[in-house]
Length: 146
Image (tube, rainbow, N blue to C red):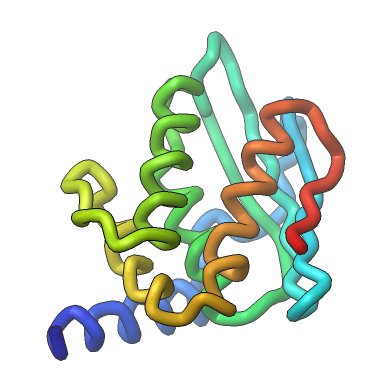
């Protein structure tokens, strides 16, 4: 358990300090803005979708380490996936951070965020980028968690 906690902390800190795919994605086919009014986290998710596949994805935002790391890891794992895979991955990730379900192997590096479920107030931080992603894919401009 201590090893998982260390990996969690290392990975979160790394993705927070050096977020992957950070910045506006010019020519994005989908975009949404997410906001968590409880803590102030804000994120914009940009996607380039072609033939029902995520060709590129990026994010911008200002939030806590959990929110930033979640967005960074999310963008890493979504590139090249079909929209069906993206929706399924969202469902599995949401289950991972909100229940005591076993850790699904297919989550890969997202598994480090499983520790968030031990801190219920931080679950919204971890899921904000994902809810924003889903809003973007539904062509909704905003995703606000409450």
